[in-house]
Image (cartoon, rainbow, N blue to C red; front, side):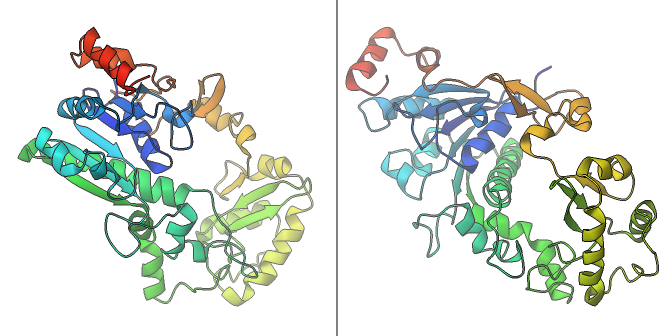
Length: 376
């Protein structure tokens, strides 16, 4: 069975960060994705990353004679274009939204940036850490007695960026079915990450959130929601927020219920945390997991990337697949009739000739592109 996006055609301008991850999501779901790689792969994308799976790849220099015409032929035939450059770059290449939408009025033109297409910071360089810093998310992460801890680029690049662009694309495609018209999506990591913090703004407005780190339920402040060091130096995640789950944790760990009865008393959290710290140091992580994992006590071992692929739950659900001889996360979510599938990782330029021929270019035209340096 083909994925739910079978028949969708996507043109991706190679880059780094959230744009290629978004294209991977669409490819996993069955879309035909053609990535425009640079002639010499480098820091701006291409080169065999697992994130590049499931594409066709053409190697092309948009600045060379004839290349722009080839790209516009592709634009004419695809449903979606994804680019992750700074504002104005695609316009300077002659491939801005106005040009592309004239060529293909039904085109969904997805633009992925850190700051957005306008605003005082639009043209400034930045990375995930900078974008989430401006949203308040970074300020809330880490220990109370030191600077905020830079997280993995999941909340910004992947969550606020790639996932929001993917949602924007499928939403715009749905609208196009009704209107027959394409449109431009301005997906900014800063915007998307700000949206992800909606709950925390609600908690702040209701007086249930403090700006100080490790002073709240979800930031490591609560003794019943955090990570603990075990006897072997490995870690255990503990998170029984609901009273019945919290009570079960106390029972399984044989903790005195009276001393831990004030679950929601912030002033008592440090003392109860200290007691839990001492307790979890008495056994190894896996010994605690054998007792607590899989119960409603809401406890799980903290695994590294090597351990993850061997965990029985991931094994049972086939959550990891083999890509180029290495374990790689499988596509998600799951569909009952049209399962997603992870395709092979292409080499940059692997499909240049086949894509050009599919566009209808003759051998003479292809030879001219080679001579001009537009293709390798």
